[in-house]
Image 1 (tube, rainbow, N blue to C red):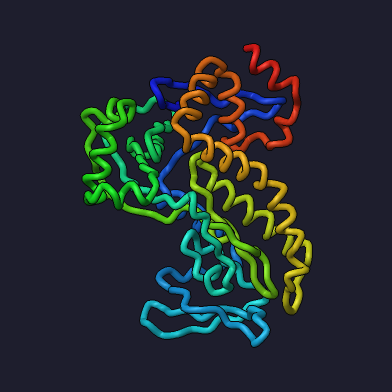
Image 2 (cartoon, rainbow, N blue to C red):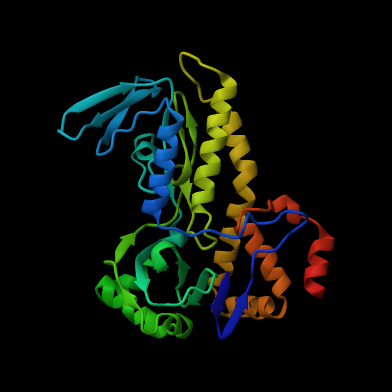
Length: 330
């Protein structure tokens, strides 16, 4: 990772931390490629039915709110009702399952929007990039097919105040960010700009009688540390393992699924707090400048933070005073 901002540039490669090493470094690829890989792997494992093009229209619930399945609309527009022992909402940032269960809560101070596209032309440096700017940041990673994936994450208010089209706002923001302007010099935008947001909400509950939420559906934090895919996949693994331990039952209550919530909290709570704390600090230009100056002078500290966001070390692995003392002295 390289972090740019306030006239500083901090370069932090993935390094070994207390015996934990990244498995060959990081990997960045397009979401449509990753999604295809995941679907193919699920189908190859068997016992999975895949219905592309079907849409969720609602949950099947009794008067007490217990979930018994879902109503779906197939490609021909016909309504299908699928009953299930447990219904898992893994339907992303705009989760209809979470909305239907009434558990979504906005985080107003993180009311942000992402404008995303891909560029051809910049030379692959082998590093992902974050470029800080007023009221937002650019995040960029080189992905497959020689493309640079570029995301501009800003307060939604900044876009409204500018009174520009999304494309014009994106181009103006590039010109206003010297480090990003240098990276994209001579680059060609090869995809239409897309908007995603709002980028922050939490859920008051993640498990219910007959249902559970996984990944972004269970809560979403502005992805400054780039951990969204990790949170989604580790949550899916934890829930699958827990359901396997419970064994086949006629139905599953929220009490049956509490161990999933506990294990998920142990895995991601510390990471989420680190991300929120970092974002709160970066909202103040003065504090952000101090943070960048500190990291530039102590690159080993930056490496520890990148290791944490790279998800190959756990927060508790970093809870050792000697580790930080050594990093500060380096």
